[in-house]
Length: 86
Image (tube, rainbow, N blue to C red; front, side, top):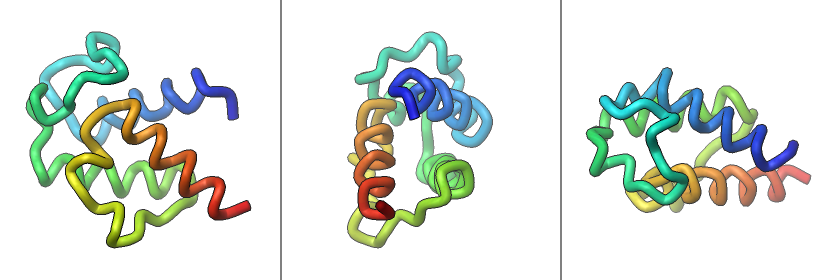
């Protein structure tokens, strides 16, 4: 998967699942999603969307605020989980 494809999928899921007030296009890859209004509930919804989209499961050790704090952090986590599957 090309990096921009991964990035755009993550951004789509942020828009659909996290439902933060800022649009995904307004966010920089390093912006803190919680600073833009993401709640713990919306982060769980985002996690479930990511798991469904990418066919991965976040282990308990990755269920931290840092993992879901930005597009960059989510992208890094997805890449790690995908590498574990191969």
